[in-house]
Image (cartoon, rainbow, N blue to C red):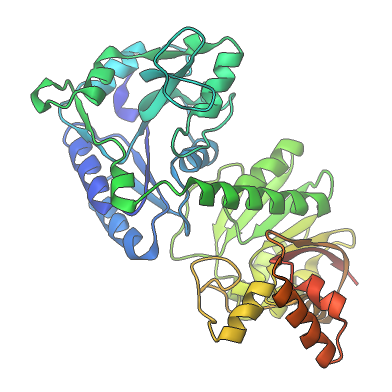
Length: 441
């Protein structure tokens, strides 16, 4: 096996100095292609991007939220064009000597899941001091995997022990032998004496020490919410579309779900952020970076055969959302549809903030600083009707219902005082967003 072509994946968060150490030490011995999956905050990610730019053959992919270790690996495994062996390294790995990749590749046989440091955990992912009946856990700090085998099992999830779900699945299926322990790697990971290490130094939980924690609960909540929205979108889409065009192109999971149900579907995604172009198609057949406010007529002519247009949190980010809808309407087939996800400014949390004069832009959510427009249920209907559509289905996205009885009473009273239906106003205040399906009128 020629190890110099093995791609490398690492997930980063708020630690430019760790990525500098990783890349500088790795590049001292290897020229392999490296992809950094980053979920750092705005005050950190530019520094990490600058570090990556100093090294050849390093690709930087940034998310506008803390994607976390397990989900970051999962995104890379599912969306990057990977094949054969893939090396995964923690951001706090430092390469001391060459030869570790060759040693790992020599042990990775066809059909194996992966090789690396294997310890023993229970089904909750916690270390145990027994082996009989325990789950063999391949640690992602440094693991070489066969990507085709890995993709046949559950994806990494939890940040603290991100490989728990795939390892438990292997264990329950009686396939523990698909992962192999490398004794020298265990020595490197557990040895605290610098001169005694074989190839690598690993500062355990280096990212956690610098950032204050894993914030697993936040990611799990966001992941569950995103999955719920994807399910709503899919429920409003045609059952087996031949062509889908998504504007807003998020994490690629929706494209994967659609293609799994309809493999022949031609799925095109248009990313709104042209300043950070992506080369990753993932499950999509084509990914485009476009200034959506200034798309040419030829773009719409080329998309005239689309069965479903998905506008995933896109309209609120445009200068002229009504123009986009009108131009789509002109080329739509009679039996095609638009499915849109649109944040709801009438949400009770925003109303409460307005009452306090605390209307601040945020990194995500309803008051995302990237939003140029805001909508409510009523103005969403108005927007689509003026553009020549009929909204035929829809559902509110409710992440957290308002439980404060005093706030509930206040909103009811406010609605009644201006002649509105208190019950309807209260219900409209529950939705963080709306998912709607519109057809040509």
